[in-house]
Length: 524
Ligand SMILES: Nc1ncnc2c1ncn2[C@@H]1O[C@H](COP(=O)(O)OP(=O)(O)OP(=O)(O)O)[C@@H](O)[C@H]1O
Image (cartoon, rainbow, N blue to C red):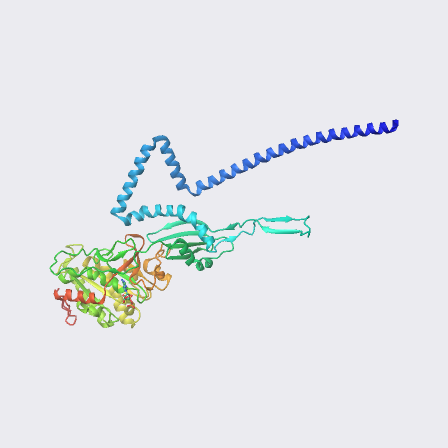
């Protein structure tokens, strides 16, 4: 090798050494930058997660403020006052609630039980399980925004360029907004996700009921994107309810006419109705076959001994001439046609006027006695004579019923009307009946007409009562804060006959409408 070759070799070696040195420096610099970037990324991700966690926690605390406050209060109590006082207080509160529940189930459930149950069901049943049920029933939407994983294969023998697979199965499920729990039904409000419509839930109602392990689930549209899934948790009114038995003929104990047995409530307790006093005038609405007559007969069965003793006198107007005619002997006055109905009403009004004259200035409420019995008018198919008859008869009847309902309470007169179509047009005096019962009706609008505005929204779903559940209905108002489902006691035909025999053997007081002279000596 000559001098030139050696020189080139030395220069080349020097250049290579410098390059290696430069690359070494560059690598270290890049490694430092990468380390700094990685550390920054870790800090940023940690901070971002912490902020997200804080925002989520804040949202939870804000949205679930009752639960949050409760937890904070419990923890604070535990910290400052100790676990012993907390346990004793919790035990005492539990004991008080239990005693309240045992003593008065209805008021306990209204004021406290249903809120506790709703809270429990929301967090431990519906929030946990409903998303799964909805998904299983096809009520979820596959998220179109799921990132798609793309695999590029450039080295395979057949050079299949690109394959796509959807990554995971992310889905959107309707969100539970709230839970309300009544004695028989749970109402679960859910917000639909885009791509769903309330009708989808209607179609899946049966499957949802099966998933919840209940017999019925119904769907109500509350807003365009919010539905209520109503699950019937239990039904204590599936079997017919027996009416009261006729008392022993020798029995002398009286009947509390302010609380006669009428059937059962959905709590499984007695449903009692007043035949006298505030709220005694009652309108019962129900489609044909809904069981209106059991609401009529059952309280009469319960008041049988008072009818027999003559402290209650029952009059009947029966445009069909069938239902009341079956127990004709029970009714002191009885009318079928419009003319006869007016006679019955006139006679009652005469008695009313006579009591007014006798008691005015002496007492504010006429005491019920055999001399001045409680006059109960049972007006079946009231619409037949307040709408579907000639104008003169119609007006006369409406006027007389209005006087009896507005003035009768203190004077010992009670009117109980039964109607199939509860429109104002059919029963112009509808608002004069302070107590209403809504049995199965054919339309949702009828519920509001009978029970008042908001009754349907608050759960009086009388249009959903099955045809097989005759005698089941809802009551609301007059001291009842939430619509209450009830079933009237069933009075079979032979029992009506037994009641008639029981009452007439004791000497039922039949008022002779021809001479308009009854036991009170009211002359025409
Ligand atoms: N409380 C009840 N429990 C069980 N079944 C009942 C009850 N009330 C009525 N039913 C059943 O429903 C049928 C119809 O009842 P009901 O005659 O009282 O209906 P309605 O409302 O008066 O009908 P319509 O207006 O057509 O006379 C009865 O024959 C009976 O079989």
